[in-house]
Image 1 (cartoon, each protein chain N blue to C red):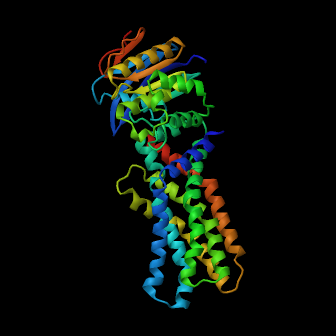
Image 2 (cartoon, each protein chain N blue to C red):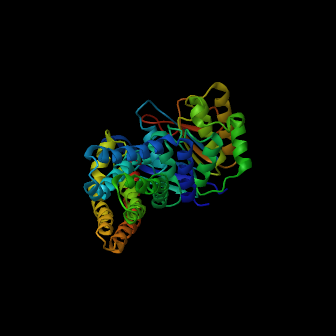
Length: 221
Length: 201
């Protein structure tokens, strides 16, 4: 087993030992999205129109909420030094950490979102679009947030700083994610949107690990 | 296990914008233990981190030959939610090595941790955690150990265990550098007080 796989499994095991951290994030997502139908009232057309944007924004906030701890816990207990000293590529190690984060955050968000979409009165096709766009888009959020987490490591108020850094970078993903849901609602195809979301995710996988690794090496000094 | 050697030439390091030491030169080979002493703030940790390539040297060179480094920082580097055994096991995998069950058990026994192996690290005392972190180093096949305050929080019996493990590591041709305030009392140890003296024998 390679070092990257070991780290991936270690992070998953750590989440299983302390599931509360993930449950809180998912609960935040549920509460934040259900506030909108409650606040706006039963205006079916309006709710259906804003559903995509609300679900995507809430998913973005939920993902960032959980990303603050991505490297911070390893930084606090000294395990980060061991990662930095590992003979394998640090770029692969951070990719493994982001992958583990996506499994326990992005994936459950994509599964939960269509259930919440029901409260907005979305039809079946739109619900499928919500799930699919989040499935393809959340890996990008994990990676962008991971970079922001690495850059803000050790900073005071790192959570706020992380959001400030990551949110603007997540805008393209947000636009194409909600765009796809809207395209489905208006009867157009959403293949192009999904393709662009996938392209953004691949671009993030291909470039961000290097930036993340460099940021962590800086933090280690 | 190949024998590691280290040659440091004219090393200078900076921390917080201040130069903590300069013109540091020494050489170390297999079977040798260097004890770094010196008052707080004299740069022991900075030197160790630079040697481990975790920190950056401002000037000078650090040349390791055939070295496989095991690191013990002033933080233990253990995950609280994993057991002692899991921590050592995953640390080995992260080093790219296949964990050797017998070797890990041996290291756990050397630090009297066999009974605690299945306990989550967060339930252990500071001294027990330190022993677990030391067992992680001892379980690795690394030939160069860099230890920052390894005696921290250790009771007398554990200090004795650490001395025995260090002596065994040296006898097997290993190299070790330890920043410590505790006298090491090991045959062949070289002590160097940072900031003042020259390298002693």
